[in-house]
Length: 66
Image 1: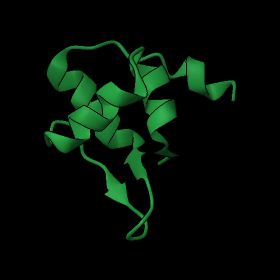
Image 2: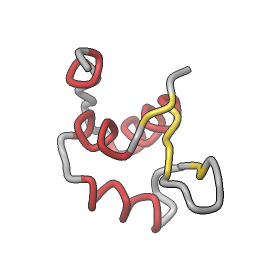
Image 3: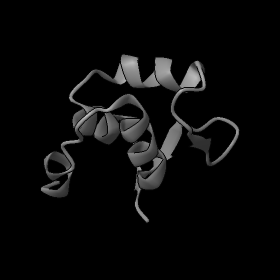
Image 4: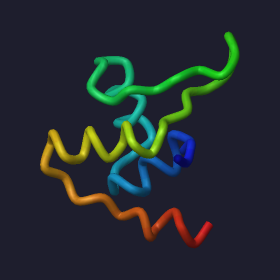
C-alpha cells in the first residue's frame, strides 16, 4: 500500500493541503508521523476509507502521474 504526503492527498481529494491537515487534526482522516518533527503521511487505504465514509470520489490518477 502506498504512503502519501498531504500534498498528494489534497490532489486526490481535490482540496487544499490546509483542509487535509484540518481533517487529520480533527481525526477524520488517519495519518501518521514518521518521526517527532516530521510531517504527516497518509496510507492510501486510510484515504480510501475516508473517501468511502464521506462518499467522495478520489482522483488517484492525479497523483499516479507524479
